[in-house]
Figure 1 (cartoon, rainbow, N blue to C red):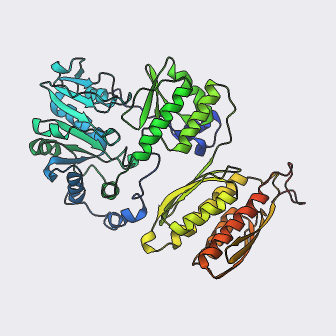
Figure 2: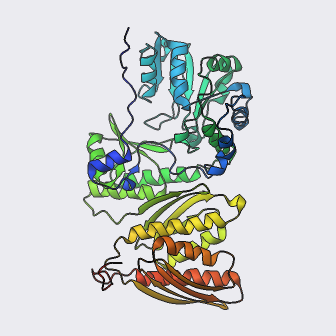
Figure 3: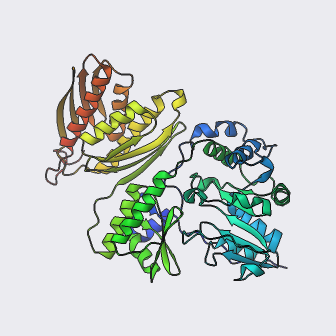
Length: 505
């Protein structure tokens, strides 16, 4: 018999498709429709993959025992309580076949994650409303898409508690394992590894044995397992996501919206015609998701959440959309860096790469230049600061070059002299479009001159810096401040022309 396609889970369009639909640069698209972390974890960097890449020609004969052991320790369980899979979705589908093939499935709450229904379709099962009559009961706790916390029913069918968002709620059902409950977890949400597709099931050993015997061999790749092991071996902190969730909820209320109380990293806003609001937000680059009876929005970081609020004000209150951040990413074998930059800005600056001294120096430069800058990421600091500092400055320079565009209407030249205790620094900037650095830093703290050279190469500017003193820290800080203040002058608006007799820079 020729197989026919089943009704299947539908992924939303890519950034490129959505951007093309509304005439935007794909980098302007911000996804509030995926319920994922706003950034990868610090552990997600090339060093975490080095061993796995060295052995990528081999199978893992131990079924990723170190990862399963780490998961067991994380939950204070034994390794035979853990099964590893390709996201929790693998288990949702597998358990439907195990416990309800041609049988019945119920979900709690009844309005919940759509994958349960697709799993039922694949298993030939019937979805019923009453959990007491079902062979298999999926309990989404906290619930997607509403964010609510529900109770686990006392029923005779097999109970599966999907705890994809448990880290945001502080509530789990681990005490239910002894009575036969199966718990599903994922690395896609709080751990920030949605693209790695790693999930796991927790249950009594005899259930784990039955589940594992029905899985394909090694459904998780060795690279994904390495990323998951690095993530679960590092401290997990969701406090910023929780505070942003509460802040965003309050701001939405000021717009006349009424989000439900959430125990997750997203908010559900009851409303009529949510599809209309989704369509109205998309031309601004904000991607949200409509459900029957409401809109769901992911909680990201403060910059992204403010962007969503600005877009909502533009749609609901007809207020002008303020200038937005340029978004840029740079990935190398040694570093993973992301930038959000607004020129001009208000001096709202955060640089966090782990290279403490140079993070602080770039913060000084951006603040005194009057930029809004958020530069975050990780590098191979175990080998020293060199790669991280170099790539940090190159990434900032590349973003600045893009933000300046054709440099039309800018003053172009800037000069500043800054004292720093006994040190003195003098900087002259030309937004020339040509990369030229003339630097005299004495004493150099270590990489000050090289940091400026890296910036100059990618920002396509001419930079002259002379800085001297007795204390290398003071010399460096004076130099970065002077460059920032000179840059502030060069970035001032001065008509609408390109300040060059050639007509271009």
